Structure formats: structure tokens, C-alpha cells
Image 1 (cartoon, rainbow, N blue to C red):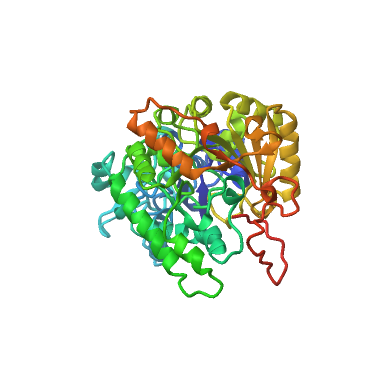
Image 2 (cartoon, rainbow, N blue to C red):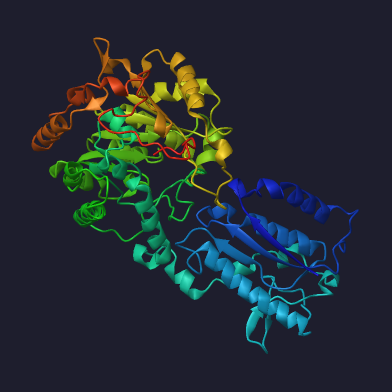
Length: 550
């Protein structure tokens, strides 16, 4: 019998919850004299580890340790330990799935060889935990019945055979510029996934079935909103990420950079092409179809960390020159970039947790000083004159406690608005343990926001969008004579930003200069619950409650 161990490395080099007990037991057994050094003699095994090389200090730590502990108990390794890298940029075969397939092929070949009796004892002196079969011209670790009797030190065995087998090609590519086109199918899948997300609100508005929550809160025309990003990379690996971690990650820009003009031109054309696909589709309103062909808003969100793009300010200026408003979202890990950012229509910071430990657990950031960067980003946001927003994503059983800590973070950045939204379930993923049980009901989101509002004397619940499971807290300065002004005067913003650029940045303006009155139906407590009455509500025939959001 051969035991195969498929193990993943989670936060801080620790095993996943389901493997914690096993790893603890195995580690203790390997150093406990009562078990003896030959406790697993006769057992044959193979190990394949899952990890992400961007976490340099903890890459595939669990698989390395299990391999080491089994060897210390005299188990016999039948082949090289395999490594799957979730970092598509550094993965030896382009993806973690391809890494596993390559290792599995070698493993099956090894089983066939063992079944035929082709065995060769390992000397036990191999530091890389692999032997070279000259006859077969393959680097494979062989079944060893005697390696426990060899007097080798633990250090002689240990290190990952995958490290020893790193190809010259990989070494050459280390630190080099990476072209996104080289990521092949991974990027293609990301593009397809992007298209799937974009039409959720724009197609509804084309049909007159309502817009997204940004339409309710800020007056965005969803069918004229272009969702894009100049950066696919991100500095976090959030547990609720809808991309299932197929995107590249990093703490700095290391990729081939397209000019801002090219990105915007292609993004606008892609938006138009998507809208054109709905020409003649039953239910699409002709006037909205024509409107949708002219981009009015750009949401720099959903994919990657746009603020990482080196020419982000040029990108934003080009948008404004084309009368396109800008909504930029950042994960609060780049404070200096936030400070140097030119004015945007609305600047968001994702606040996914209220404490250092919970933020680390939920966002799984790459920066070691992630908490200080997070706090500095909030302070940088507070220095901005234009509209600023905290975006809170509620994940039941993860970040819905510690309200006082949330209130302290809000006091730090003093945002104009606070969006609170229940997490959207995006399906099963090996990179996340979230299930539908982690999606809060709308009533639970309301309760959370009400409790939070009680701790914030300067804020009040202004708007609600029930379908998106989302509420908006607004600063009292946007409540004029008892009426909310959370919407945006987009034409006025374009006038102000043009004056700002023409004056060389001396003619500054504030969020109060381009606010617009919020319609009654968008106000919290209205019977419409955030649905625009000029549209027609569409109910599914199965009447299943929709908690997925937009």
C-alpha cells in the first residue's frame, strides 16, 4: 500500500483546519522517543503540496514538514515531493492544476514501475530527497528499505526536492518582466469571468428591470457603467474573492505595462461590443440601448488593484477628458499611492475587518506590515477633498463582531459614506472555505448597520438596496434641511475637474460642490427598498429568495 498526502499551506505556513490535528500528531511522533525512529518503517508514501510562492517565507511549508516527519519515522518516499503553485506567474506549468497534473503523471508512471518490480534502494544521502535512475534518465526518489539505518543527519534530507529541481529557465525568469499574454488560458478565463460579472446590472437596466446599488446610492446609470482595471494583480488574497484566486498577486508592479490610452480605448470598445450584443433582444429598451453605447462611468474595481498601475493618474485624467466619471476602489495597502492620487469622482477603500487578526484572516495580505499600511491608507483617505467611501463586506462568522473597532477605524478616515454589503457567494473554491452559510440575510445586515450607526454620532443610514443586500451610511453634512443629497451631479464634477486641471491643481473643490438630491425611493425606509419605480421589478417564477446581490 502507498499513502499519498495532498496538503495545502494556509496562513502563516500553517496547515488547513482539517489537517491541523494530523500535522500536530505527526510532528510530535517524529520527535517522541516512545515511538522510535522506525515507527513507520515499511510504509511507502508520496507528498504533493499546494501553496503560493508570493508568501516567500511560508511557501509549501506544510508539505515540506510532512515529508520531513514521515522520513524521520522511517517511511519510504517513492518519488519526489511535488509542489503546486497558486501564483500563476511562477507556477512551473502555468497553474496549480497543471502542476498537479504533471506530478500525477510522474506518480502514475512510478506506480507502474513499482508494480513491475523496478525498484532501486535509495542510499539515503540525497539532500533533495530524490535519487537519479540513470537507466531511465529520470530524477525519481526510490523506495528505500534501509534509509532509516543510514546515519544521516536530519539536515541532509530535508529540503524540498522541488527546490533542487528548479529549472534554469525558472531561475532566468526570476524577477523579470512578465507579459500578461504569457499567462494564456488563465487570463482568458479571467476575461470570461469578467464578462459574466459585468452584465449583472447593466443588462437589467437595458431591459428596464432596475439598476445596481450604485444607481440607488449615487445615481449611476448602470447600463453606461464600464467596469475595468489597468491592473489584474492584487496585494491580497481575500477569502471571499469572486475570482477564486486565478489572478496574479504581488506587492509591486512587475508586469509589462500597456499605455493608459490603449487600455481605455480597448475597454470602451469592449463595453460597446457587449452592449451591441443586445441589439434586438426581447425586452431591451431602444433608448437605453442607445445610451449604453456611450460610456458615462468607469468603475475601477472588481478585478485587481488599479492603484498599483504606475500610470493610474494619467488613466484617470484620460477618463475625465472623455467626460467619464471615475469610481476607484483600493484594498488599503498602498497609502502613498492614495496620497498622490489625482481627484476622482469617488474613492473607495475596502475595510474588510476591524482588527489586525481578523484582517489577516480575511484578506490574507502579502505585505508583512499590512496593518500599518491599512491604517495609513485610511488616514490618507481622510486627507482627500473629494467623495470618499468605506466599503464593508460582511461575512457571517468572520467579521460581524467588534463594532467598536469598526467605529474607531471610521473615526480615523472620516469617510463621507460607508457602504455595508453582505458577502456575495461565488461558488465553491479550493482557495476558500466560504459557503452560503457565511452570507448574511438582509435583515442581519440592517441590524449590523443600525448597531454601527449608534456608535457614530456623525452618520446616519441614508439609503438601502435590498436586492444587493446593501445599505449606505452617510455623513450628516449630506443631509441638507432634512433631505439627503447622496447622489452625484456628474456634469458639475466634470466642470470642476476641468477647472482643477486647467489651474494646475490650485483650484481645489470638495464633495459638497457636486452633490445632488437623493430621490425618495432610494431613502432607507421607503417602500421601494431601493428599487427605481421608473423600472419594472422582475420576479423569478420559482420565487426563490435571491440573496446573491449585484
